[in-house]
Amino acid sequence: MFSTKAGATKLLIGAVVGLIAFKVVVGLLTHSISILAQAADSLLDLFAGIITFSAIRFAAKPADAEHQYGHGKAEDIAGVGQAILIFIAGGLIIYSAIDRIITKHYIVEQPEAGIAVMAVSVVVSIFLSRHLWKVARRTGSIALEANARNIATDVYSTSAVLAGLAILRFTGLNIIDPILAIAVAVYILKVALDTIRKPISGLLDEKLPPSQEVVIEDCLKKHSRQVSGYHALRTRRAGSQSYIDLHLVIAGDISLEQAHQICDQVEVEIQSVLREASVIIHVEPCDYECEQCAATCSKRRTT
Image (cartoon, rainbow, N blue to C red; front, side, top):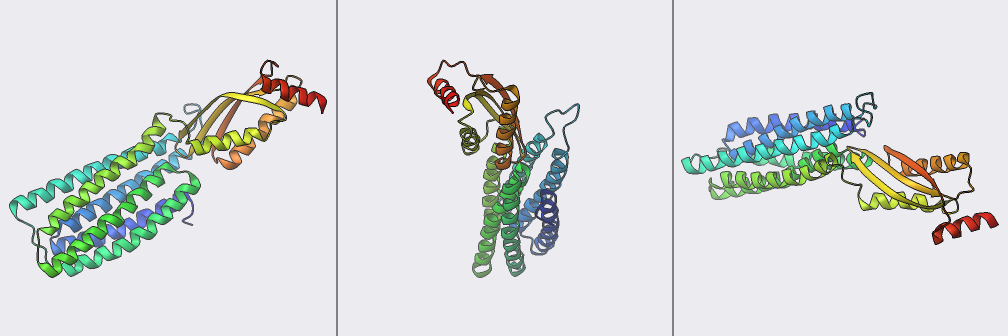
């Protein structure tokens, strides 16, 4: 149920709603800004989850007359939106924490309750982030990956708050609370920078990673008996979808029907490794001028 992109997003939303309620109640009870900062971060996770759910549903729509290349970039846009929300949250937390330090309004009551809610939050965030990473890698979802990265950072920031509240409990140094909130906010801003890089590259039509281009080249090498070479390989990504086009040089004595079959085989092999890949191949006849073409074509004539 939770192994699909939509299912994982529903799990994310449900878990985050529970954490928000838990953190808000305890934050108001203890007057801890570091716990309220965590609640604000979880609230952003909820907004991000809703954005991701909407983006995934929109990106899954098939191509239409107005969007002939599909709607995959909706996931990249969602990733950018999440990063902007994270930036805003980090800035607001820093502002509130500095204000409390200046006004000396940082007394924390019942830190034990804060320690309990942070411990629960750490455990939930660990399991949730791991599941989101797993689904994101299998489906290639950029929006889910951004969510997984965001939730993973909650583990570190929440652990820091947990440790700080434990120190506060035994030392009585209440100023630790706003200082921890600032540290959490700085880390949140770093996460925002990391989160925004990949979706921005998708919106700018950056090529596929080298590891994926190697997969394409390996598929082409399997057909070296019929394929003399290739050039003009271009790749780009839109959300979880990949777009590949290239020029394939084929021996001149191969018929049009055979050339079409070779292209179909190459497309199927690439798509079996790179899911949701759209492959366009332009066929060119071998001109017998380069050594590779001459060797390939002569080999075909002798076999």
